[in-house]
Image (tube, rainbow, N blue to C red; front, side, top):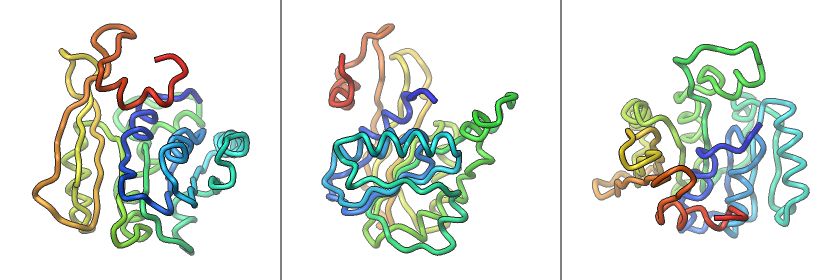
Amino acid sequence: MKIGTDGVLLGAWAPVEQNPFSILDIGTGTGIIALMLAQRSTAQQIDALEIDEQAYEQATDNFENSPWNDRLFCFHAGLDEFMKEPEDEYDLIVSNPPFYAEDYKTNNDQRDLARFQDALPFEDLIEAADLLLSENGILAVIIPFKEEDRFLAIAKEFELYPTRITRVKGTPTAEIKRSLLALSRNKTTLFSIDELTIEIGRHEYTPEYIALTQDFYLKM
């Protein structure tokens, strides 16, 4: 599967200022977000979870061939199976969850599994975060902007509250398409909300997007 902009955004944006010791990437795909967080942080334990066998094998290969292979590990399991006997708490949990619920389904089962919300409902993701986050841990996700209110409402039921929100649009005149959300158990009314525009024109990236992601591109 190709690396998408959503994964790059989350991998570059997810907060690591709290110096997490342990990180979990739920639905890692090819492992891009976990690899980016290995590059950005000093976390000693970076676990990833992937249910699709081909994606799991590719993520494992990518981890083993990276400079951080001693800190990265991928589990071949679904989230429900992983949660049955949780062994660790995590200081940072990240996920780029499948969310194309309203779109038509293709004839490609693997692509459908990766893209459709019934593979990982928001409720399941947030319940897992509630169980697996350390006391001061952070959950960071990227979701469709139109799902932001619903995601935050579900999170509130589990006493997880926003600490930062960045809303993303492709060009200055485009509608907001994505929300980057960071949540924790600590309720605050002073969380930050900002916007990020990716491009001024075709392949002409904004200074903000370059500043966020340039450490991960060979040509930027």
